[in-house]
Length: 310
Image 1 (cartoon, one colour):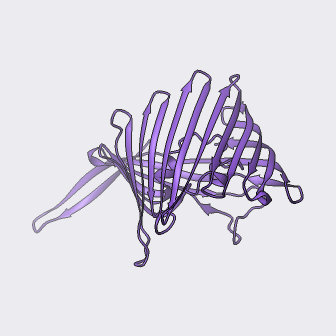
Image 2: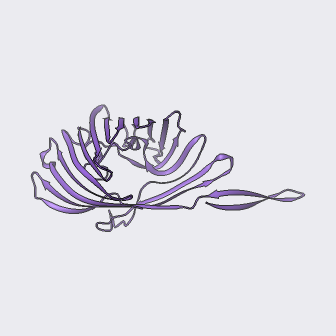
Image 3: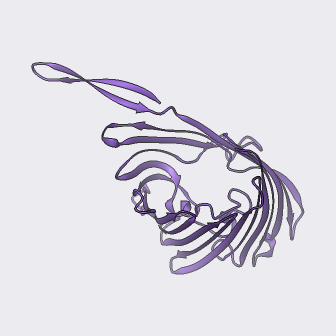
């Protein structure tokens, strides 16, 4: 940890005093993840094809600066990279992810910038196929949002209970501001959360989410239920997941969900297995099937991938 001494000159009519404040600055942490899959797609009413996917691969830097009075300044800048074709939309080589500046202390934590809403974060690790085709954002939920122009407060933990509130600035006098909030409880291997969105996806749109996760021995169980209301019309969806750590290196996973929120009669089920090659390296296989009342969107996805974290 580096220490930087700053001298502040305080002027008065009769003297000038120099006061030294010592700030403890942690060395910035550079981190990243590269996740790439070779995927084969079998469509019900169309041709089959294969594709190489970069799945939320990213580069970032984050850190903290110890201040006076037990406070810490926090910062993070994170960008998605694209290992498959080198760009996303409109020729972007990098796409902004969770990026913010903030302050934390005994009062909790305040941050401002662009980051996942409390509603999205409330899912914790229930979604075992996150960032792959089996991700709940593809069939189950419309509310996996990373919102810009946000100011968020998270309370300190009260016996495992944490409240988070996110104010989303619309920056438009004709558009209402959004609100996302969650209440999450963690105790040992038990996790329970409730989350609420108000006009995050647009006017007159609200959502609620309940999440539960429990780990016992080598088995992790999870479930999620949510509703989405749009001007008086309400739809709901749910999913359940299970992971079994067969050995110290092998984890077998299964997940099933059904929802009318994104598409009528939508269902998604996935099977997969992870094999740990090193502490921060794994290879994995998966199969996902998606069905709905609109059969033209029915398809099966089969993939094999490799992930590095650093």
